[in-house]
Length: 118
Length: 130
Length: 102
Image 1 (cartoon, each protein chain N blue to C red):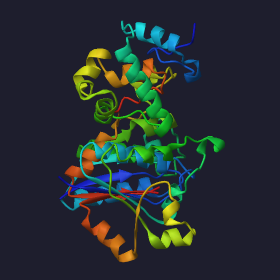
Image 2 (cartoon, rainbow over the protein chains, first blue to last red):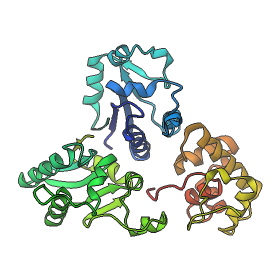
Image 3 (cartoon, one colour):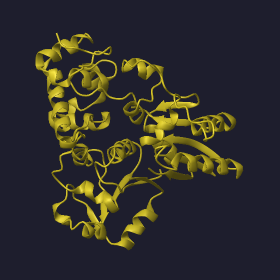
Image 4 (spheres, chains in turn yellow, cyan, brown):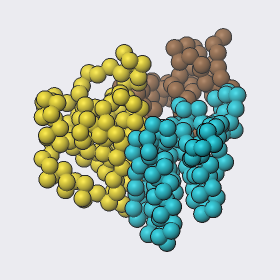
């Protein structure tokens, strides 16, 4: 069974891509092992207490809370991206593993397939 | 080798649909197989049959259609992305009480299961991003 | 009388109430019992928390965890919400009409 690594590399509400990426991940989780890696601006999706409704968007990041139910437990982001936005890894929306660049590369290399949503 | 191609970019705001078509053609010319092309995000806008580009510009929708017909390649447009963007077939137009079906021939509206299936069954997945 | 679309979904989800749910269920010939209600409340709570209508497998597991193992089966769900449980349950619960993709 080929595993899929989903990479989310866009901010949450700039476009609908992040929201549609989560839809794809949830679907993927029904079929195979899926992992999730937030890269670049993607870490902005992990900032808690954002209210998409205030700008006419659905508050879809709430859906990340359901990932455990969907069997997605391997979730990570890159330390240098957290640093770039001065985000505290202990105060994110989700419990994620923070990876250095080489660990990040290993995550990508280990996946059978990669789907990137930015 | 079997390729799955994912097209996410808006045909009028990115190079995604054009590059993906060139790539798909190269896959076939190279003796490989295109398992499926999956259009997602704004990529589904390519499937709108009501577009009327100027005659001296590439008609990218028509080019995808003739490519698919010639090589018998599946062009799938994600249903959730399509509904948001007004790309509807007869069934969906009726379901959502809209005046018209707008999807171009050769394109089929279907679900995200088709993306996952193609991703798992292809040897390579190539995404043309937004 | 609230407005519904051609498939019997509420046009305005804010119109939902328990009385309206009975009316929506009647469209499918369902008379709501406590077995129905505990699941309706569960999916509405789920939606409030996660903005998602759970996939069938996730819903079945949730029902099992919350309401007892014997209820956490697809059969239980199918029996209560005839035909396509996800679609019928979303409609009766006043949640967004699901796209036809699963």
